[in-house]
Image (cartoon, rainbow over all chains, first blue to last red; front, side):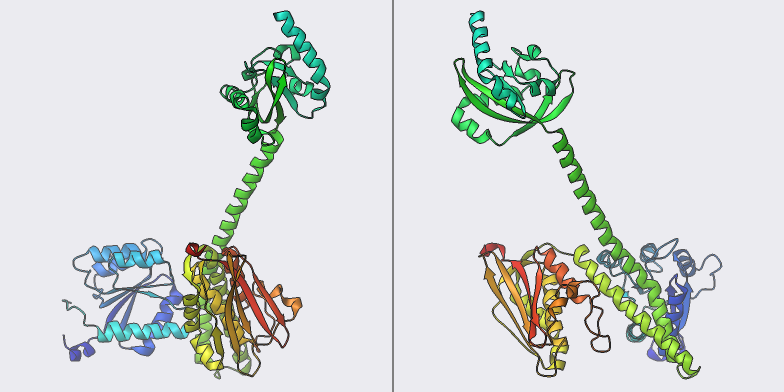
Length: 151
Length: 374
């Protein structure tokens, strides 16, 4: 994939987040920085796995270029989702970024042990949150070379 | 033989009776064979025997096996030596009543020279009430520690969980203000501005509450720490404020101390930060020094030439969320010195202030010297 092709195809991002307020904020922030990218949302771990495995009504789901994963969610939490993704031969190459309010050392350590690609804290301030989304866009969706895959 | 012994006993009883009965405690006199020779009314009452049931009996009937023999052996080993240690310092053990029930007693032994040889006098005090009081005190202390810890955890969890919904309120009021300012009417602009201000102030309060509770919950072990390096670290963190104010920060050589390094940095940072913040127009000057006190601890001082504080506020300023100025004059929630106080107390010391309005302030706190220098 070269840069020219990349621009034509919108980037697909899966946001795994149970708080609608956070979903909207993230959407607003991406809207400002990269209106072309496609943001898909899963409200819990079960939905996220269905999306990624294209099962249970999500057969048409695209394979995301990046996963933004919250840790604390109902049903299957972010740690379990992360463990499933990184244990899956097909899914483990998708960069998975933890995006959470938890600043606990144990959550950070555990996430990297489970092969998270990056751990980010949701900033409390709106400006800081927008800057973070901008950085995510710049680094993961623009600068980083991501693996190629079919579909 | 027996007659002689009985006669002697009678003589002795006659001699000591008055003395024994006057004693407030139960008194039991034992001969080297471990037999009870004499006792007073209190002893009868305490152990539930009649006098004639005990005289001539072995003392181990009323003091559990093992103890009695050892006590007598100890007491007789060397009257001066062994007893010197035991006199006045009661030995706590169990007594056994006639009905078999046991109760805690404190025993005080002393030798008594007599024609029969050295006898051992035991003053036996029933310490049931004291033991109960001790146990209940211990229980209370444990309860208090537990509830203190719970309270610390509660503050931490509450402030952490409150942050989530508040982040939503703050973010969305900010978004509202950004997108719709000037598009509704002037009332709407004003209402939104108050909501934004309130939410962001509450955010700072909660963050400060978190920082305050972290002093207790995230505190590290006290280790040898360089006071010099801790201050340098704090000054690096304050670089922006120091440069903006043109403050001159000087310090003497600082000793190594026993501290939680992160907290010592925070302590310096809050005190030096305040010294720079609460200032008149001229160049802020801050000086940090330390003097040794009683050869054990170090008293650190952070001295400034700032606004100074009225003595009536000396205690108030260390309270949580206490402020002496309007928000328009100086920003902040009023948590800084409360954190300083909590850190100082966690290090086994206190923090004090000496100040006069218009003359600057000096804050002092004590820290134990580093272990290898003690």
